[in-house]
Length: 386
Image (tube, rainbow, N blue to C red; front, side, top):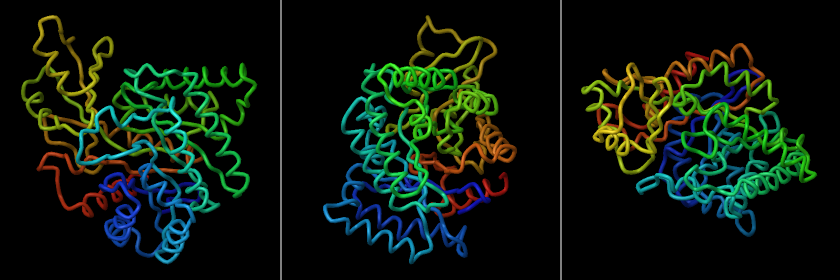
């Protein structure tokens, strides 16, 4: 839906298990329209599409039939697509995802081909007025020690295709790389230095740094930057000063807890589940990072790990925007609120907003309710805070 003359809001359909195009389209015809009928029955409804590599390939198809039928369906249902989540390449539900969500990374041809397909799709689907964005991983995962030269080369090749499609279709298309804890770059400073290196690579390889700035930017996830203990307004001001594009803003929320409180430790154990990575970052005088909740709990049992006093821990587990977790846990909701405040003051910062709580299926029971109710409540929260 349109929030105002400049901004569009959707929720990301990565919440729904679907890996083939047939499964994805079924979700759109049922779950997504149920949300539309609840939150936006009388105006054009925006869909934040998630497509796996398989679904994207099937949607394009050898003859383009599926894509033509989908465009006709969007018109018929008064819907439009302005953004695609291209972070998860393959299966994203009901399996051991963890760090596999970063595979293949941007050092691989598979990631480039997949993302190129997404841009071919979004160039066809998005309205000229909104333009189109695709979000993707922050290059790679730190543990992979990926070749950054290959990351730059593949990202630049993608930027060239984005430029060509933008000019051919008369639409503003852009890629947003999404910093995340323990990603190849994960916080404000690492993001700035990554793009500095990327720009220098362009110059040394006789590529256009201006094309890069036009077509490749940042997918700012309020959960992820809050986990890093970064201040929202400071981060967005620094990106603006560096001339970096904010391609999309993910409105999402993370857990906070006191790691020295036994009740809080017991409460956070409810969120230790086997599907996704739940990175933990602890702030004392410095930041201490753990790849996943089980590794944090293991460290607590070792004699050589000492918590600073005082300290605060934050855990990468997306929880609802509209509901604070039960005490003694807390959330980073103030970061999402801060982002919306910044956008009110600087509406030109970013045209694309997406609600992205993908963890409904693995939330503890006390946070569960029917899916349409969950998503509708998140829309209501955003609309009340815009």
